[in-house]
Image 1 (tube, rainbow, N blue to C red):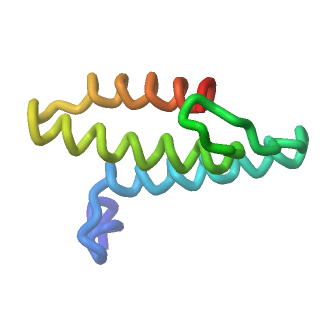
Image 2: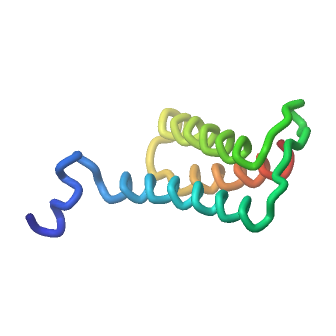
Image 3: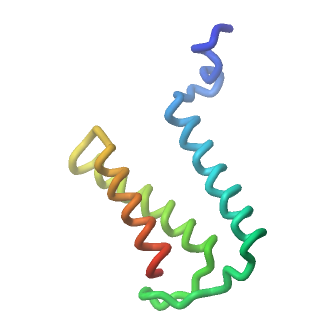
Length: 97
């Protein structure tokens, strides 16, 4: 097995693997943040929901998935500008939701 076939056993690509590494990094970062700065208690946002940090992370990840799917459906690749929209969406979620 050479270096290019390391992910072929699951038919993954490097971008797919990096996506899951990113999700893992988000979860680890949130865990460390909660450990060192506890008290991410519920906050009442503009959606009239009481959300914690973890809830806001989940909403931002789920919303980003829908944004990117809509981007692909209406505009097609490349997704770089769609990723920028997702980052802005995640910032808005963490600030106001």
